[in-house]
Amino acid sequence: MKRYAQIWLAQMRYSLTRDMMFKINFLAWIIVDLTWFSLQLCFVRVLYLNVDTVAGWSKWEMVLLIATSNLIQQIFQGLFVNAFIGFPEMIRTGKLDFFLAQPAPTQFLVSTRLFGMDSVINSLVAFSLVLFAAHQYSGAWPISGLAAYFALVMLGVIMNYSLLLTTVTLAFWMTRAQGLISSYYQLFQLARIPRQAFRGAFKFIFTWMLPYLLVANVPARTLLHGLRWREAGALLAVTTCLVVVSNLFFNFGLKRYSSASS
Amino acid sequence: MSGLRRIFNLYGQIFNTGMQSTLTYRWNFLFRSVMGFIPLIGSFYLWGAVFTEKSELTGYSYPLMMAYYISMVLLDMVTWPGDQDFQVAEDVKEGRVSMALTKPMNFQGYRLALHMAALCLNLALAIVPVLLVIAVFSSYFREVPLGQTWFVSIFAISGAALVQFAISYCVAMLAFWLLEITSASIFIFSMEYFAGGHVFPLDILPAPLYHAAMALPFSYEYFFPTAVLLGRIRGPELVTGFLWLGFWIVFLFALGHAMWERGLKKYTSVGG
Image 1 (spheres, each protein chain N blue to C red):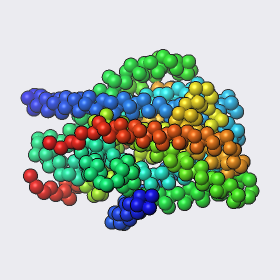
Image 2: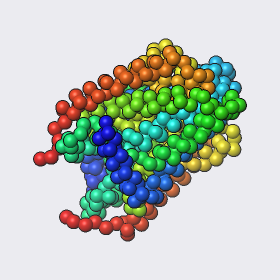
Image 3: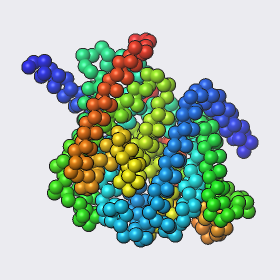
Image 4: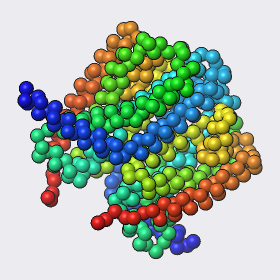
């Protein structure tokens, strides 16, 4: 475990050095993500100009939900997304060979090879808004629920990791697969919608198979209304299953890899 | 006459190459198209919850709102410019642009011919799913005067495809000055997404914001053709819209050309 932590830290140090070499790019990413986040909040503003609640969620509850989904996405983005973005291209060009030859599990090396420092700043912005929205909603700072909130946020990050790993693993079969990452972002949009708005088969699918309706909803509700063991247990159970399935699928895909050199 | 024929032959060949290249990566297109329906599911339920509180919202009923989102997804499926910004940027970075410089053709025209080929193939691949979606969700289109709007929509959709191409080409040209265009590309994508009307119809915004959005090129990529199809924009507003659309096409193509010319002055290529 200590060895893995050392490898990860070394990869983080390398990424940070790389980020600092391209400072404008680093700042540009912070601005892009903050713009994206602000535009989502604009949507909430437009929506609540016309109605008082959506599926029983008031404006500040909705802001908290969006800020929570953004927090999860930023942590996830910082830790893993940059590494995954280049993964389909690594398969196509045969650069994956380099990772196969290393004395550590390929999945671990591939997943942690790049760290996005800009996401740390954007995570802090998202978390500040979480606290502000919670305060606006209840009139008090939500200190007591923070530990459970963070545990659930981290479960959300792990869940996202497993789902994106499964998605990019498809690149072993698809020759050009740049569209895969954007597809993940399409799915993640569902995390910003109150679960109570969904009905029927899609509620089941997006709760139990692709649990995007749990990932931000459960921590947001926990912070406002306290821990509900049933919801938290569901998130834990589904995340555990996804971790196992994504690992098996990745190893299955890896067996199909045949490099690209002549 | 022979000069004109030569140009047709040249760009016809490029068009063919583009068709073959897009066909090679058809699974990417199909996967992306299927995933494009995911946010639509979210919109169904989110707006369903909104319309339980109200039966009408700034002129939209629930079926009309759904018709808007369905049309938006279908439009996106047909006019998506692909990852051409990244492809061109990669060509600039790797020095492959040199190959285009030695050939008797206009680079923007070359990329446009490739893009048109991809669009034709997208259209061919999308036609069955599009008809299927319209048939399945026909109840949402009952309020839409498709008989009156389909013809003029073809022009609005074609114009939207040109604006999308021109914007992605301009973003690609940034590669002459920036090492990495991803952040610029995502920034433009977020503007296209929100100011283009992907997240909500722009005409539910307060009037000043709506007019500000309609002065930007992004609204002509998505909102304008969709609103024309749904009959939300008609009369003098339709004429003004087409004038803006024409202006943005000319401006963005000229901007792309100017960026190419300026970029080439900065461009250096090493090696064989």
